[in-house]
Image (cartoon, rainbow, N blue to C red; front, side, top):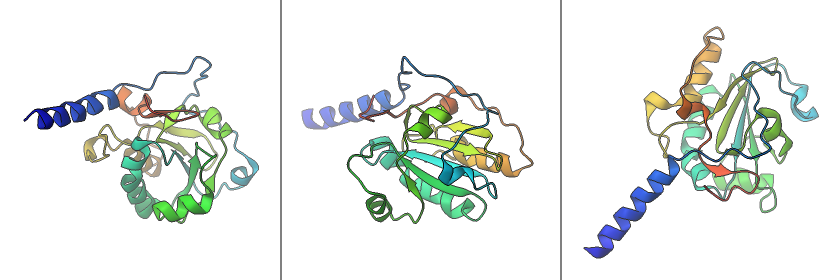
Length: 189
């Protein structure tokens, strides 16, 4: 009974910690929705589709919990949106290892400057830019740790809004305030 209580307490503690926002770094410079995002030369040239940047760290538990949700977005919108994985822990993995490990046939970048340009300071985070590279959405994928709550599937809602004549969507703080692993090391709360 004691062991079961300890496991339950640990589970609920981790859930509680997950719902605490990631502390905002001292030197953080916010980037407003509607800002034009300066991209690296590999991404800057393409204005044919909106761009979805998936800020990711394979060592971050929150990023791993989110991978199934991210794959479902790629499957649903991959023909309309260019998806790019931006890995925030570039010392341990190659692009091929990321693609193989998570079964994703997408471009993988190791460019931490994109996080600064987009106002990202934790993983996982979604950034959706329109065809002109204007920031349409930056935030969380879901309010649920395992990305299972359809009502708060924020990244999916943002994609639908962008394709619905650029409909302006107002998101709550759970969507816009970072939850997950800190940057640059992404070692957790």
